[in-house]
Image 1 (cartoon, rainbow, N blue to C red):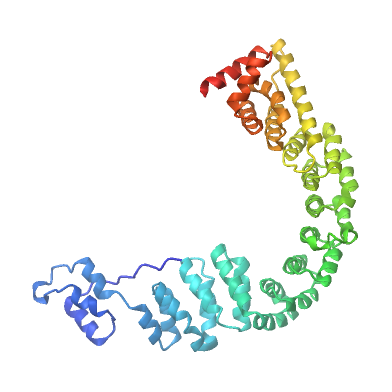
Image 2: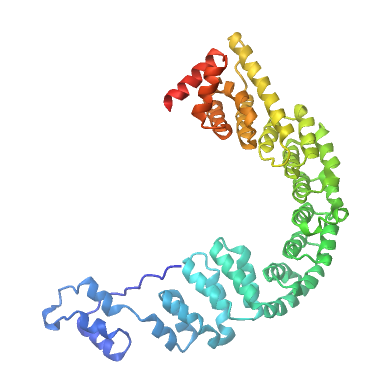
Length: 466
């Protein structure tokens, strides 16, 4: 955060400034008084004092002023009007004024019309108080402010209080009106001492509070938290079930006990589609091979929504195993076109045993090339669907990513595709698969193979550009 520019007050006369200097209300360095010499007699009542000299005369030394404040009103003046250094200094003084400083600091920190620097220092000042109202205000600022900087600072202040903040916040859990705010504030304090108090309110009738509790506990790999998450998979509230699924989906520490995570499968058929999608993602992220049959059921069902199919494809691709690949390819033909496109894109990201994926993509490419050949022979045939164009682009991209150089020769005919984007993606893939340079490999194919005229023309045109 850059220091604020010095605040310049109204212009004053030379005589007035001299009086102020003598009385000590304006503090200036000795060099300021000698840097510029002005004869007071030469400045008439209608003449202007140069702007640069005005600045030297009326700039307040906010640091000295902050050190000399004697009451809360003066401290708040520095906070609202001071420069960066003055505000930094006054933060240290607020605890001197006791609890009376908390309410105005909360108001300043929550003032969305004020500048961010002003609110930033108000939050830092609040962080020096351990009173419950200051702590809960910081907790509210973590989630209520639109500024990431202010939110992060409020969370940092809470975390720095540690046990003091926990001791102040836990009693608030007994009061329904303050319980949610207390849970949010406790969630910023990463100490094991918050686990038990939060678990005690997990049966609250408010689903928003239950969801917030799970979110706050999610980073703790504690058996009590694990059991709470598993129980929440059957919560009556969809957002609570979704939060439990998402959190369990990051518990890689449980992967050595896959039976514990098996209940995630049940949420693949949840009444809420978002919960289903997150369950598929969690299973794939954790690599739960015992749940592959459940994912295949989704792929095979004609009743599976398209959005869930796309998440299931993503999940299967993350397994990166021959068995998961087989499921993807086995059901490809019955999938909606957008989901087929997702399959093709995901195949290009496989790292382990991609041979069957390469062969599958080459087979699909051959079908599209045959279709293009037939259309060229019958100009009256309807134009190719845009979805096919998108899949051809994805095939070229995925073959390039998989890096099987044997696919180079099969991709070359795609250079003659009527769609310029398909040609571009084909060139990019050929560059990735070329054994030497793309120019050399294309010349070898051009001179050593009998090619369709359209393909030969395209190769010659590309070679001319090099």
